[in-house]
Length: 220
Image 1: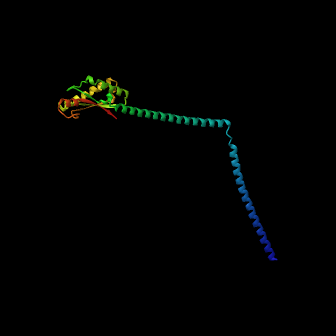
Image 2: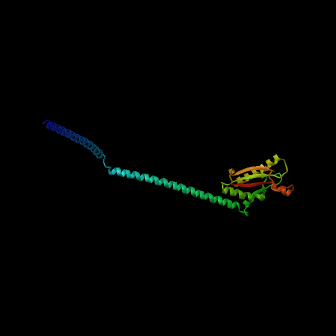
Image 3: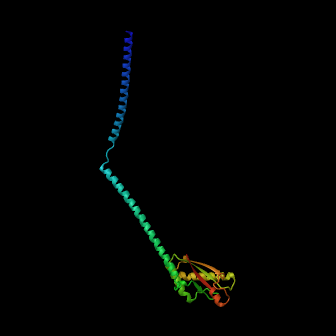
């Protein structure tokens, strides 16, 4: 009899334990179901709060994009125009430089004569050299970017100080003549070497006459 009572008690306890576990599982499942339900409800609320963009808003966005595109297109056009202008300017400068070199290299031109000669102890420009000076003056006027240096020279007679002063005066007088013909003063530099750079070494009149000169040196 005691055996049957114990067995029944064990069975009852097992049944209670099983029921307790089942109830716990159900409660846990309900807890997860409630969490998922709240998450779903919150998402639905957020979704419901977002109103679809109106036609006016869409048009405003399209207009803004259009304006941005037009601004970018204008910027690119301006850059292209600036590049073309710069390229054209560079081409013009290259052609001008080529033309300058071509004119200065002509051996049959008055520009090929780069020296003006003087009488003894004089800085007066002789009439025979006037066409040469006019050619150089016109050339400098035509090409204002060209620069030259006028170098005054003397023969060996006289002191070093005197010859340096005379060579300077010869160069200055020639510069004035070129400026009167249309050249800019800024295009012309002057220097004097006195008797330090003879063209011909000698003490005869023919040699000395070649050393009394002003040289026109075109600068790069």
